[in-house]
Image (cartoon, rainbow, N blue to C red; front, side, top):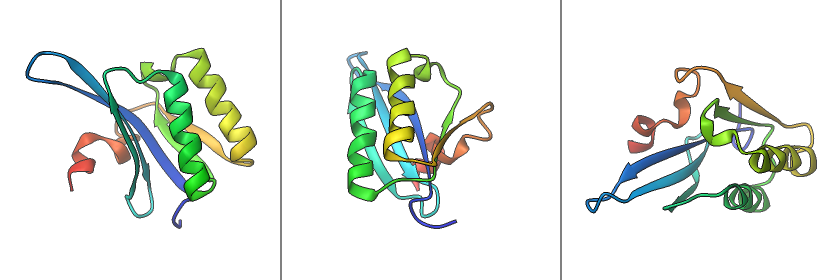
Length: 115
């Protein structure tokens, strides 16, 4: 494995002291654990996630695969269409790997982002 071959992406959420929830969209390079993107907002619609991935690809080039879990965040048909478009157009020969268990997707879980 080498830099920029496999990325992992996931969403996290937390709550501010005034009880407002916020979300983060995180993308890391699995080889060197470099954080490629951390988008933070109260809402992260599919269009913004797709745009973030396109910006990373423009900056870093194409990965060979993108790992993500099987979470409900990926249900959006717009996001699924966008991911397929990114893979087919930007990442020809790449694939999105949907892991079925949290253990398999641990490469981007919060405990790994700390240090």
